[in-house]
Length: 188
Image 1 (spheres, helix red, strand yellow):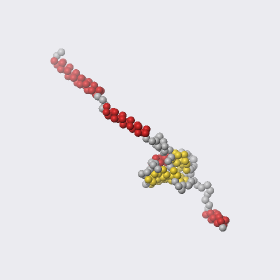
Image 2: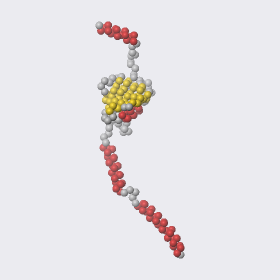
Image 3: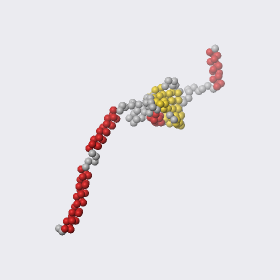
């Protein structure tokens, strides 16, 4: 072999050998140091342990939505966690909850009713002339208002005004005056 052929052979063999060494080095080098991999595994295990150790709030389902309580005001089912306030009547009821996320209560209401209009306030939302969204039956409308009364403590108030018409129609003014006069005469 001539001198020129040897030079050409060395020139072609050297780059191929360097490329092979670089590829071999890239394959054998770890993608991340072993300490980083171990730290990532430890963080994942800690996060899983915290998630399992966190107490399950019975007011919420697995998706984090507020559960229904089984208690009703007319056709509306109250969410879990609300207690009736003193002075509530069948016509106008008031409920409150402590440590309750306002957004979760609003989400609960929005999923269960179709209001005629919605009024937003600085600390609450009012659903006017609401009908149930789960049925096509002609049920009486309601006004439902949720207020965040104390943001720091998560205090939420729910006011419900049932707009069901009375069972007996109201008396006309003349009939009411006659009935009142008769009641007074009996009382004397």
